[in-house]
Amino acid sequence: MFSFKRLIALALFVMMLISVISINASASNTPTIKVSEVSSVAGSSVDIKIEISNNPGIISMLLDVSYDADCLTLKKVTNGTVLNGATHNINALTVNPYTLSWADDIATENNTNSGTIVTFSFEISADAPEGKLPITVTYDNDNAAIYDKDMELVDFAVVNGGVTVISSKPGDINGDSYVDSKDAVLLAQHLAKWNVSIDMSTADCNNDGNVDSKDAVLLAQYLAKWNVTLG
View 1 (tube, rainbow, N blue to C red):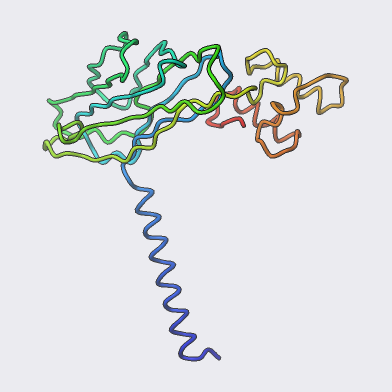
View 2: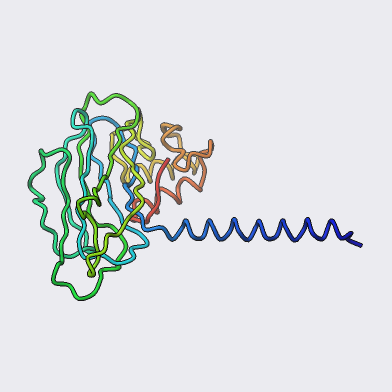
């Protein structure tokens, strides 16, 4: 039988566990702006998404996006469908930081949508060094950057991302700097014991140290535009 002291200790442990679970659940509901992370080789093109999650309700947002202009050239900015009233100039591609602005000041209800708010298309310079090129989002609520229909300020946590320049691209099994159906065919041939030559490091699409059917499935999902990441 449990002693009284053991019972108290067990009760305290359960209470602490519940507290930790509650904290984690609360943290997961934090309004967040997130910059995606991608890996690619120098000289290639990449898309970086800026996403909003757990949106409590806003009608206006003003963000500044900064990046390393020595290694990244902004080629295109594509608005998502999450926020209404985009007022930024998607053709002002040489400005860094790039300012994103949405305003729906006549809205009678808050916009509570979550998802991709904008996609940045960059070209990595051919001589970019290996390593991470940070892409950061900032906003200034001292100057009412984000607010709701009642003109109350709304704070968001920011998770910054960036582009990691690597020597070889996961999934680029034939080494032509692209990840496409040619790579899927080559991987399938390798797994079927055909006499083909592949880059084993890029064929390990899930980065588990092995090249097997799991990599083929992940590559097929990536090519089918599933929300998966190679490497």
